[in-house]
Image (cartoon, rainbow, N blue to C red; front, side, top):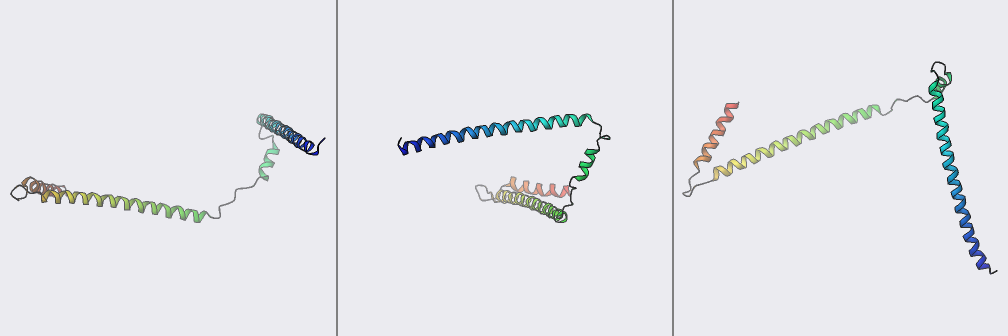
Length: 143
């Protein structure tokens, strides 16, 4: 047999072997995972039926567990949250002030536009003058 042919056929055989081994490993992992899940479920069922007072092993396990440590950055986190809240409040106040400023500017533009209106002879329109005076009187009455 030609060495190139044997090499080529051997390569394909090794690939098939590797693929079969891979499938076997995957099946083994899957079965072992299912077995561990089953064992956990059985353990939970057995543990649930026992009384906590009679189960000293469980108390012993709790004492071996790590205790929660205090956060070393608690003060810094608190300060950061407070400063963030202050910045948010200041930003909201600036946005509200900007909105009020825009509203006042729009009202001023409307008033100036109305007062600048003229009739065909170049005189100011009486209805705009009267509405301006009426608005001022109503504003004073509200105060």
